[in-house]
Image 1: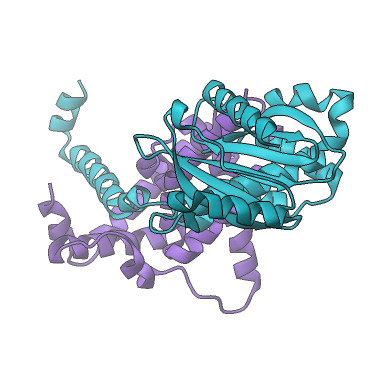
Image 2 (image 1 turned 180 degrees about the vertical axis):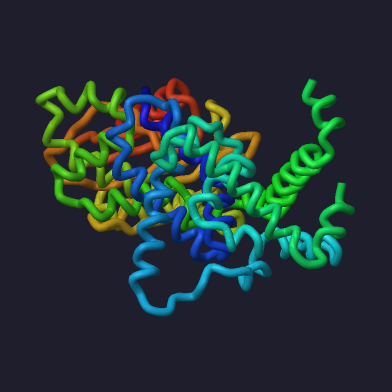
Amino acid sequence: MTVSGVLTRIEACIPALRRYATALLRNRDDADDLVHDCLVRALDKLHTRRDEADIRAWLFAIMHNLFISQLRRAKARPAGEPLDESHEAALSVRPDQESSLQFRDLLRGLNRLPVEQRTVILLISVEDLSYAEAASVLGIPIGTVMSRLARGRERLRNLTDEGEAKPALRRVK
Amino acid sequence: MVQSYLQAHPDAARRVSDYQEQRTVLRMVFGGVADEPIPPRLDLDLLIQQRLAQRRTPWRAAAAVLLAFGIGGAGGWFVHAGLLPQVGNLTLLTQEAVANHVVYTADRRRPTELGAEQRDDLARWVSNRLNHPVAPPDLTADGYRYMGGRLAATPDGPAGLFMYDDAQGQRLTVFVLPMNAAAAMPIQHVDFAKVSGCAWIDKGIGYTVVGKLPPAELLRLAERVRQQFIGST
């Protein structure tokens, strides 16, 4: 193994780390802060890497742990800014009128999921991690990944089913 | 089989298609972030440099060099007892050379302070400030055009930076930094995430060649530059 090989692999993961952090935090600056901390931590732990395999899962695991401790700190503090849909404008997409409603609806639903369901959905559906990879990132058994995914998807479906958003969701296909 | 099951169970079919839509929409909403250019503060090379800069003490710096430049490649010379004292020198030299390379080669409008036409002026200026005769090496035979250079600032005092580009516009820098007089070190290959380089120390003067090139090519150029510096002093 060469360190430059590992560094190249880390570098290749940065876009995905930013995507996942943005989806978790809904704020571009906070997301880049999280990715920054993750990269610094990864460089600190570089010497613990024996090979170039699973660099992606390793990085996501580092970021997940940072995210969770950040959540804990936020909870300990009185009134932090809630992670809500107010940061939607900061996302990169400029959706048209119709799909914008649909996006907002789904994002609102996503925010109302418990964080352990949200992370599983994002890792599997957006980041294309396998169940095994997601399990190692989150530090939980594969069976738990699968049940959280199933429960999260169903809950998200019910949440987006509420109100008038349903017809809009149907039209997109 | 799945298909026929879904046909027979419209509720299940609706669920499957809803899940697919969730996935599609989530990817649409968040996908764009990954296509954007990476902001400078997440640039891995710069993060490594900042990290090295925080650890100036020789032994920690030596460890950082091992980390940043490739455990496999560096291990060989690091354990070579005779070379141990030079590790701190090498850290400073390569760190400054790579930092200057990254900052100035990225500058499209004004990468050099004095252009190729002021070669002699630059040579005089740098020689005066370094208190050591230094002229920009000629790499024309290797396909590199001399672009110009500048005086660079380092924690160890002034350094000279000379820049070159090839027919594809790929940039290469030669960096010269006077170090403590007793130091000497043969040519070493060093490696960052996006650039790599060769560094050596002759008679107390540190030299590097930095660029995005395969190691063999860099070594060849470094040897050429080294011969020219030996010949000129």
